[in-house]
Length: 504
Image (cartoon, rainbow, N blue to C red):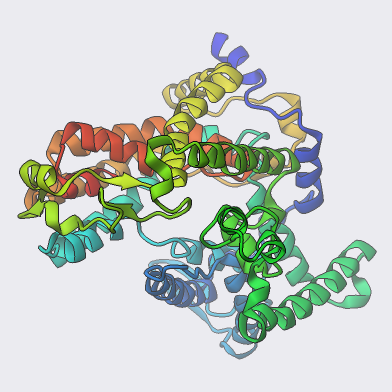
């Protein structure tokens, strides 16, 4: 009875009217469980788009200004491809392992469209383990074995997938977990699918969405060539630099590329999206205001004060750069302090310490501050709800049955998924254990990380998945963990770049 009361009570919930409005505007209020979903067309098109995006994004990841093809590309291209397959594939019925299936179940459905994008979403971001491969090949001089690279890449990806399932109850099911960027995708799916239906039968709201979509698509396509090809200057207009072209301070503060970007205006949407850590259209108003306020305070107030006060002898270096410098102001030669792929204390002492620009130092400090703010914010504002949700999940796992939810959650659109069987948690647990064994084998067999270091890395990831995921689910902002993991690894294994990269 105690478990029944606990699980029937409210868990994570949202009192933010803006968030609820976003959900109600994007997500349909009904669902057809019998609509075709995992079909032959999904497998074919999903595989094609996944491979294409994986190659393209990995290839362009090495640019100084990386280009990434995201889900909107797949959403736009898979719709006509799916429609074409629905016209040409045979409708003959096949039977395999007792299951009846067909290559062409009929019209291309929105669920097929979504699943193709889910397939391709696995390749929109570059495999993080690629950083370890690059470090070993270009910086340390001892390239990583092909098998080690494959195993570490699979480990980093599959561990994440297992976590997504294990923390599903906390980060997906509660009605507060809106995931704003996903709502944008849902809205686009509905608009695109409406193009496949009879226009005369569409509701007025959907016709307006179609019209807006085509106007925005045509306008953005035409405008892209203006800053991208004809007038690249429009990508960044440093108004402060134009006002004082011979003033060094104005150039440092106003330059959008090598300065702090004060009063810099861009007319290039790709620049806005890349600088904003994603599309600003998917970011709730409260999160956008917080992001801008934090940026303005630290980049336009604290950084100039520290630089022009000559803190850490800052004025001898550029105000904005991610490069590392030696004591004499030259670019730091990392290979000069390495011996056999490890940091040599004697060479480092002889060459001199690393120096960083003011902006780079402050950003590193922000990363250290951010992790404590992240944990304390989640603990103070959501700790009780998280604990109750965790208790509910454990109770369900022990009892083997799903308990009821509160009336508010029953009425929310998030409860629609109850028509489908939930993927058993033991499947994700099995994937986690298998991946853990594979990662341990790779780290031990190729000397990438001690076994206890690998387990520590997994523990840190597990500890921070919920706080990071919760913040992203409500604000569309993902906090990066690269700096804090680098610090932990450097403290445990000083002078070991391979261990550091593998742990990260």
